[in-house]
Length: 111
Length: 114
Image (cartoon, rainbow over all chains, first blue to last red):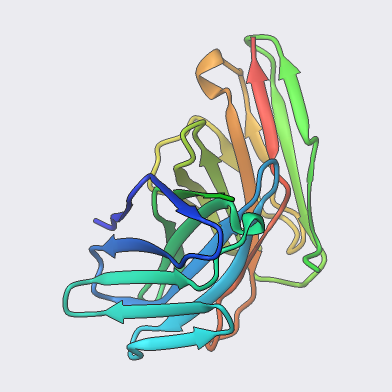
């Protein structure tokens, strides 16, 4: 079955880089996503990567995909207090486009 | 800005009541989803739909039911609410674009059953 795992909590100092990791089990994933959830709100898409790519950079965000190990990471450069939120990785499963989310990582940024 | 709306935002209701959580989107998306989010953050897919008259159960077993009579509307119903149904319910939709299946989320409905 599909399973997406993340570490639950990450705390970083403002200005440092944050790296949030995710592992998934379904090898038929077509797209992998990173979503951000701020308190009391729904999820917003941050970035995504197609499964045949290794890396994608989008301003302060860098996504790395190791398809062999089924490992996805999100690096946030120069982390700001406004980046404090819960971050979810998600995969779309093969032809179904069913979206399965990870357990979420709570990022806390302190001054 | 995403045009997907959930009502109500908050609902406190007694055990045994029937409730319907509303979700509407004006983007013409074919795919819609319901997720249940635990207090500890984890999101579980409970229902999804690929289009009108199509509904599927998700990975987490749920006593709720859904219907998709119109493209823009995907309501979730609990026939008899119980305290174990207390949770946050998030609705999402995504288009039928092969290149990008970005999902847009509603603000969520926080349900408390007392």
